[in-house]
Length: 171
Image 1 (cartoon, rainbow, N blue to C red):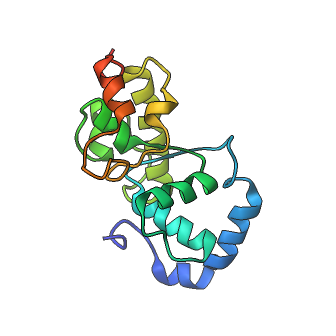
Image 2: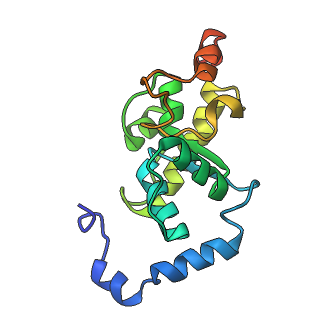
């Protein structure tokens, strides 16, 4: 799958950066542990799990609440585009939603640069079209699609209240 997308694993093994060196560079870069950095991702629970495992050199917390506490330490401001899509009842993957929002992909699918550019373009278009250019961070920040639910599977009280007030519908 990734080889078909152009990933050269042999070259990466020879020329790529060591994962521990990468973690050290991230820690010292001010990209993590910084309230001013906004992380924009798409359906990224596993990505953050891998990142936290790398940065802490420890097993991931067993409880979801502890995972989110750790995530908030390293990445205090997280927006998951897939989670935002759920808020406005959009369905599909990143490429499909981009097409529905008239956003053109730059580069091949499943390559980090191309997917990152598309994710940020979709994020800003969603914010503009569905949220009048501004997100309520109390409702939309620091939730990850597939996680971020109460233990009984229901949506959070904040999200339910915002939905009842019409904040999560297309305006």
